[in-house]
Length: 452
Image (cartoon, rainbow, N blue to C red):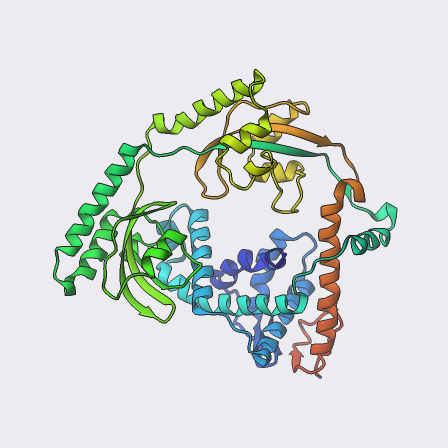
């Protein structure tokens, strides 16, 4: 739920940091010791208006004031975030931005800056927003309402005010992910080992420079290749587990053996260790998949599909036995909607997963099974194949406890969190210096105590 509340941090930061300022910037508010700039308000409006219906200047300004109040309180409560947390978020966002632009080069060309400069400019904003997120987590906690509380919330909503639920479906899946052939894996390992031997063949003082050159020339990691394979301030819980395991075993200057992760094959050189943070360089080589390797998974699903249709195995048994999706295979392939934590998907949900799903399911009856379909796996962004079974279809209706308990639980939790936040704002704003420029101040949704 915390990720949902702070999704705007992910969406607005790029605009807030890079948008061109049309006027001379000025301070339009102060919360504690933290200023709010006019450019902050302008850029928040620029991005949030596109993402949130009904978002306006007042909402934008109140959001900024609330964020600064959270950070001011975090000072008092000694709430901090580590460099590793900031670096992890920076890397995630930079990966997202690069994907949106199509390549790192296009991102740099658009803003006229190198990615390391962009990251430096983002760091302060991200650190502040992560602190605000952690502080809000302390206010709301991990809300788990009882069924009785959810029913009470439901009964408090007038029947004619209950949200209308569009048609929804419940789906099961059997997933097969293409795998690399043993030959392709061996070629990648041998290629990488030759680069590793070139590095080890240099004198100790020249090995890092050789590693840097090799990474620029040959590494297939888009996030680090042009930086000579460098990642700085790497903490635990940030990288692939196998990558971290290899990295944290190294001594300064040491070069690892070749090892495998979900992304391919690597070797690492540890540049320096700063407590639980590492600076390192690495080279990644991804095995090359042939068309035969790719379509082998589809052929496997064709065979499974035939066995199900002939009654040799049920869909649920096949999911448990053959599916490569660990999140669904143990419950008969039943898919979970990550946005609502329920098993139900409406057309908007389906379109976000796969644009072709809506059309495919419209022609299916309850109990029907699709033939193998190609899709992009949400776990690694790579193509895979799956069979889909239409388990159930729910007609449009008003929200009710029987069909929509998970949605109501989320709504009740959100409503409870809003009450906690309102109470906290009312209390903390009384003891925190808050000064707002009258030209930009406007009626807020919460009860604030503003200094004259």
